[in-house]
Structure formats: structure tokens, C-alpha cells
Length: 224
Image (tube, rainbow, N blue to C red; front, side, top):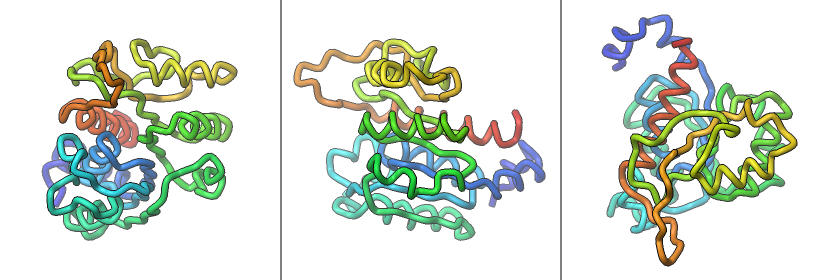
């Protein structure tokens, strides 16, 4: 199943990937492609948390959004998809939206990697605080909406972000923390000035961002 990946990185590295536990919070545009990239790279223990259903407005940017899946819970659609890709994957799902009150109950310390792909700024900040305080490996996705150029995406640390209103707000909220230790997906592209201030989004920026995060995790596992 993973012969081509094994020939690239070696069997020992593939085994390392297999045994890592990953939590992805939010499986929309960015988070969905994180999951896709990780599962197709050999991750076999993954937990997904998202309380949303697939909507027609998701079709332009979310990998699980099809006319046939509209109205279904995203985590349910993804579980089917993951097991169709690799039946060996241990998939756990929580069909709910994460709140600040839930964070301690999620047993975040059980995971090797945590991916924050949610939009709720308050929850993002509290998750970042908890991860920094407990030395957890969190990767937080900042803004991919209102962007058109995937080449401007990068994995960096929060203190080095710019041109990103969401990252700026996080920096302000986390100013008493060491943001040099918080890994984020960010963009250096100036956001489009959309008149209605909606979170308009393209097909290629969220997807590229999700794959960048997945790539970062896999390369960190194998020490590349």
C-alpha cells in the first residue's frame, strides 16, 4: 500500500509514522487536507473533532464536500474515507465543537501531534496556552481565507507572522507566552479586501496549507 513512500523514506521511517498518534481539531478546508495527507502517508492512529455538517458552500475548498455528502457530519464522512484509504487506521471521532471548557477533558497529552484547524479565536488561544504550558506539539493554522496565492504559505512560528489578522490577534492574546515555540501555518499574502468581510476562500490555499502541515508532521517524525 505504501511501497512508493517506503522506497522514498525507508521501512524504518514508515514504521515510525505508523505508530504516531495525531489529533486534528477541525476537518474543514485546512484540517481536511491535513487528515488526507497524514493518512496517505501512513499515519494509523488519528482522532478527528468537528461538530459541523458538510454544506454546499464547502464544495469549493473541502476534500470531503460533494453533492453526495451534503448534510452529513464531517467526521462521519471522513471516517468512511479514511478506512477506504487504509482499513488499518484506528479512527476516533468526536462529533462536537471544541470549547475552552472541553480542553482539559480531551487528554491532549496522549497525542504526539495536535493540529488546530478551527476558526474560533478564543478556543485557538486557549489551546495554544495549554499546549505551551504543557509542552505539547501543537501546530495552529492561522488565516487562509481571503487569500489566492498558495506560494505565500509557510510553516513558521507565531512570533514571525505578518500580514495575517488572525495571527496578529493571537500574538496579542499570547504576548505573555513564548510564541517562538508555537508552530503555525501562516501566509505572507495581504488578504483580499472583500466588501462584505466574508471569509471567502479558494480551492488551492486551504488545501495547500493542509498539505504543508501534514508534510511538516511527517518530516518531523522521520527527522528530515
